[in-house]
Image (cartoon, rainbow, N blue to C red; front, side, top):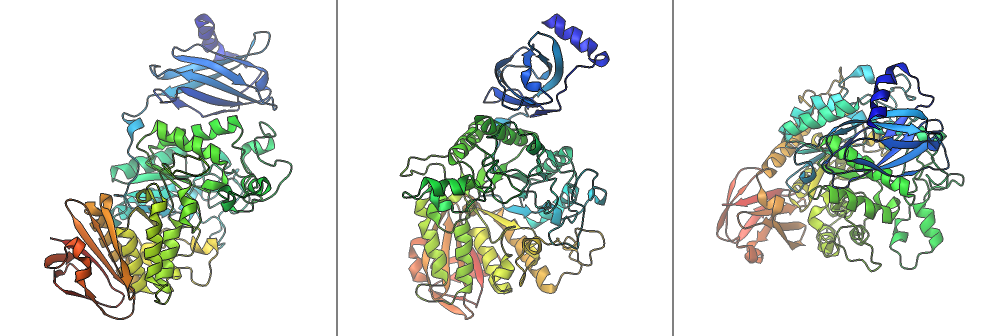
Length: 613
């Protein structure tokens, strides 16, 4: 075999094989992975009729799977942990033993400590970016030959030109603001005719959309951000792909998608998954329906699809040195697949972190998916945490509803009291807004004082806070809750912008104040271990005033939020458990010292963050 291999290597430049491999996914792999099995999906005309051979020490073919479409062949290899990095030839022969195709594959050495990488945690603050709308670092890639949708910045739903280079150029701003991780909305290829800017209709799982940049630029972003102490969190979608995906015109099999020839949209009735009385019909209508007509629903009951998606996730973690994943439409995928997916990822990276999107306002619905949750139906998962939509909604209602015995700040208190439902509520991602909802400044009726209360809450509450780009400068969408408006351009991200939030030029005095407020708050948060790892104790709100403590053995922090438009006088004796009276504390917002005795005076709509000395 070695003689044949050497001869083939010599002849390759001079000999045109009768068949070609047009795609091999994943395009390369790494040695010393926890799982030694690799599925290689090969695509080329009539590739499925060929038999593969490999002669490389440590690499063996376990099995091949030929599907109903002969243009695909799935080759499963075992790569032992002591395999050396390097290149080898995958030789494909026909039934007569003639070589019809040869493909060179590469195995790379992993970065030291890759398997033990530390994911994002509660010491981090995420900055959520919609790349097309943040900063245009390279106008030359706004329009790319072969990509269907052209730039149109005047169209709210069109492509505006933001890209990875623009984010790289903005890293110093994010670092100075106090953000320690970036969650990017998807940047993989979305070659759709319209609405391709948001990234949720993937048309190539291994390629960055050239209008955002390249795989190499994505990696450069990660490397440059890491140098500044900023982690990268990738937005992934397992539930669906885009209707323009390259395989849609030549599917591997009729069961690669759900309802390939019997299209219907999902009902979005996520509660059917936990409903003990749900009909199979309703379950199927939710799980197997397409998200929208341009987002075909992947069939994660197909073993080949399962392996493909899991490996794609691992490939990007390794390639980009990711610190986390935000999983889109988590509950829409097959739930047994999501169990397999999360457990496979966490086995490979035990200290990694993942947050799942389950947009429900009922914490019991979120709790079902979390690692360590004991469910009545026996369902288990390895998902560390979720996006805390119940908390976000409760915060807005608490700050905007009139104070009553059963409404107002008590809404926030009572939502937090539901944390007993979660296996670990401290792993959740908490947020004032995101790319799918009105901006928090608009949700709070553009009341700057309420905005400050919300920023303090999310910066000091349990969980990992995430802020949407532009929140720090009071970006709003009041009167227009279309996605295109919610995801409007960050001022200063385009050459010629009259307002520049990066430099502060053109911002209103209130916007500058908000930006400085968030900057001070987040940079202080970096120094507050009680916020990162401390316990939580809160007290029932009284007349619109909410008080809670974050504390550990070395630090104690008291947060006071007066939501009302009146000054309040708080009796400190009720906080005797936390030994407040007779102490000295510093408010990190004003930097004033307070001598706490019997009564604390707090101004209307004022937040206080006391660090005790």
